[in-house]
Amino acid sequence: MQELLPNYAELVDINTLLNMKGFCVLNTSKVIEWTHCSKEELDDLSTAWAALPSDKYLKDGGHYRRRRHSSFIFENSSLTQVAHRAHWQPLDYNALHGGIERLFEPVLEATTSKPAWHKVICTLARTASELHGNIKAKWCIEAHQFRIDTTDGIGRPTPEGAHRDGVDFVAVFMVARKGIKGGETRVFEASGPLGERFTLNESWSLLFLDDRRVIHESTPIQPFNEEGYRDTLVITLRENHFQNPAD
Image (cartoon, rainbow, N blue to C red; front, side):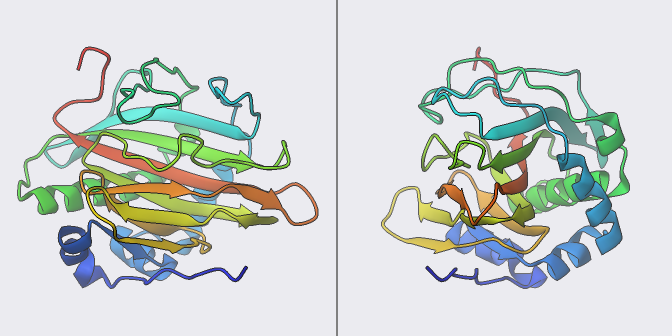
């Protein structure tokens, strides 16, 4: 099956598209321009996906997902990493893995200290503030490094299916694809029939979502001839508070 390419957005259209249809897609060159990262900085950041620990919480019994997770707060134009905390979602948003505290290994300091890491997250937070019309907004940010591989013959980027994350905004950066087929991205209206599907295949291209308005998923991946993988950086932004079991 031939891959469908996204309808890439121009930078000047990000806010319009988020307000109009709830998401937009940027190609690599636009991400570079938007974040003020060089391609070399992004390529250097990509090396951090080479040795992620296994996800011990997969309820389908799979061994195809590796990840790290850390949390941050962006406030008063400053990004601060918070004490390591568990990732938690309610069952309403994640029927498969919701309702449990999942304590993953943190993102390494060697990764969070790289210039591109800071630039990427701060750009997302500033854009989220613009979209909410509040430049002083406090953003509670969770960053997930994912590697989905074909160790089991098939890998599932979203084993929970089409979903929302229970936040305000979600950013999915395609870090790398190697030796796989599948992994098609699908975005649908949360309360309507319209949707789009496409394959992110450019390193450091971006899907940016308004999580209140759309649901999303990615289809399973399979290897071509040898084992392959799909690396992503998923960053979620929620205003004022992290999701916690007490919410």
